[in-house]
Length: 234
Image (cartoon, rainbow, N blue to C red; front, side, top):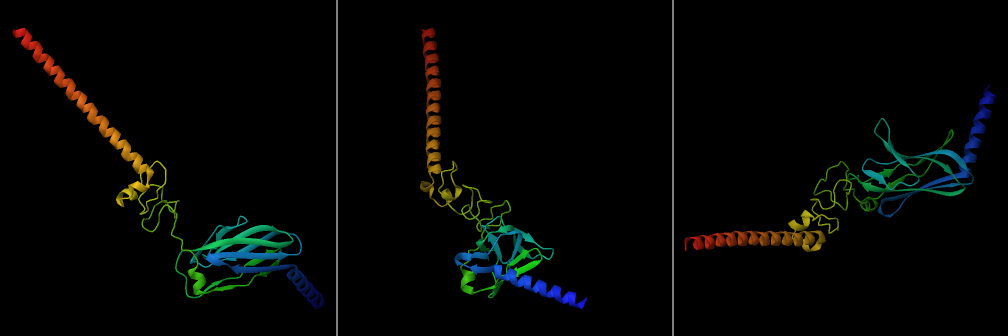
């Protein structure tokens, strides 16, 4: 029995060594918070699961290969990919945005690769303060409310509509005169405000002209009645 256990252990060890030689996983941090995971494979693998944990202060966006963010019962978050690997380099990418201020030392935990009962891990990454500062801060928390002045149309279109009050004169041709352009005395930058101003002039001019004709009609009628009454007296 003991010999069988030893043989099984040796077999699994050799299998793991063989798999390690066929697969290599590397994790890189690039400019502006871009994460690049490269899995080099010598052959095809099906039903591969990739789990990549990330710190709470960062939020992944633009995740490639249909990766999805998931959360454990303990609140830990990670990106999960269910993929097939092809021979050569297989790339998985995403971009970090800062949700909260990170600590002076932020470590990106290793990416884990699951193939059947085997697990491979990548390198971990210790982010420097310069690298953390290069990550763009996420100013958009999509909740259906435009939280001015933190959010605006350009940085959070999910919450802030074009032409709404968000502190930015967006200058877009959207059929809406942006209130911010009016408040900042920049109506000349929003063609919709200029168009609105022209229509106001047309409407006011039409009202004045209509009022003039009404007054003229009433005066003419009164004058005619007065003339007729004089003729009857004479």
